Length: 96
Image (cartoon, rainbow, N blue to C red; front, top):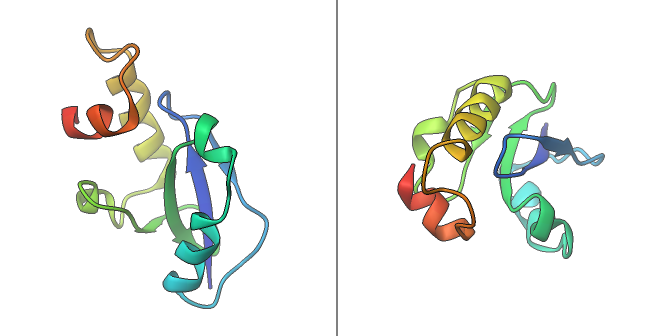
């Protein structure tokens, strides 16, 4: 079983309520979230406990297996670095 979390640039995140049988089902749900992409544009598939990253999108594969709290701290720290303010999602990811 898996869950989806949606993370903001500063590491704040929301856990989506449904649970999924497969990682692919979780990504299909993520693709249909709509407006949450604006405030929480970075989505991750987690373990059913919501504590461990199980799958990521391109450029962030190195985060697989890390704890959600660790990834949240990485995002927060990176968002506080000079030059990251006002970046779009792609630029932010590439600068990580």
